[in-house]
Length: 195
Image 1 (cartoon, rainbow, N blue to C red):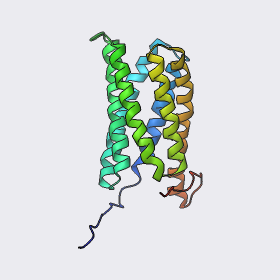
Image 2: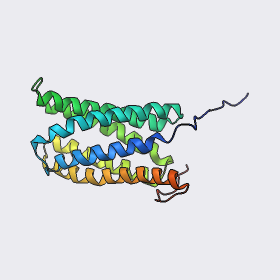
Image 3: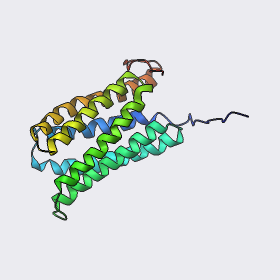
């Protein structure tokens, strides 16, 4: 029986580099809110930022599919859903259209903790930078989960850990950009892990 051929579109640049940059910028800014370093008027920045990060993530997901990169497509498609939902929640609250249900928000975050857990396991065949970034993101989600479940000081910790994770995502994005521009690895991301 003949093997299936997988045709990968090499005309499209690595979309994850763009997605990681938008994720890093979005998470870095949101983490300052969670850490309590910027106040309630941050919604004027958080809402449009969340919605545009979502837009970029959906674009990255579509191009991940075009390149036959399911990990990229799934990661950014589902995190695009996170950002558009989060931006909408904040918009609805700011406009006083619907009250925010803290229990529903906790369920939403738990669902993303589960998603990130199997993404983290899936990343074990990528490289150490991606693995560590998803592992730290797992810590962010767990801190948020327990914070909303009755330990609000953990949300502050989630903010600080989120800042670190955002910088890690920006590092991977820079590594991808500089590697492409200079034609060689400039920033190390660790070897590709093989099973």
